[in-house]
Every structure is written in structure tokens, then in C-alpha cells.
Image (cartoon, rainbow, N blue to C red; front, side):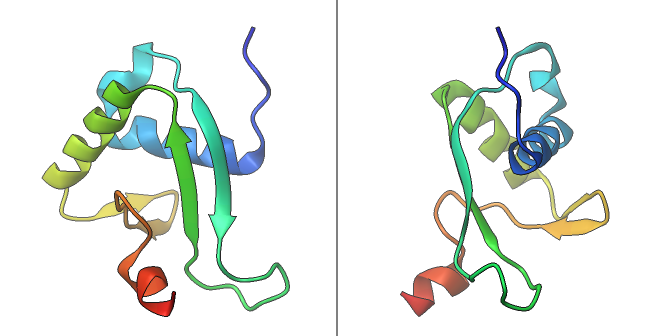
Length: 93
């Protein structure tokens, strides 16, 4: 039985399938996904999304695919993927 995904989890799942098409035959299980940083009423700008994948091998496949891409454009958004928080967020902490 597959759990219903919220809009953020659905976006992240579609993004991962876009980055690593080899995962299309697998179920991508996200242990948790949430936004990090600014409050909801702050102006819209780039924001970190923290995601934990259930399967380590899928995470490694996605990160390997990201290393091969120069830029990620997905659904009209320019996306940057980091293994940790973005350098900007880490600098603010």
C-alpha cells in the first residue's frame, strides 16, 4: 500500500525521477521531506528542502546523476542539489 504524497513530496519524487530516469521502475520512499529556513509569510525566494531517502542506493544513484549534470531545470525552476544544506544556509548558521 502506497501512502498518499503531499505536494512537496510529490515534487521531490518527480524531480528525482527527472534526474535519475533509471529509478522509474522503483518506488522512491521518502522517510521525510520538509522545507528549511524562512517562515511561511516571508517573501518568496530560494529555499532549502531537506529530504531523507529510505534506500541508500537510490540516494547514491541520484547524487551520481547530479554530478553528471551541469544544471538542473525542472518544471520552470533552476534546481541545485547538495548532499548537505546549501552553502548559503550553512553560512547563516
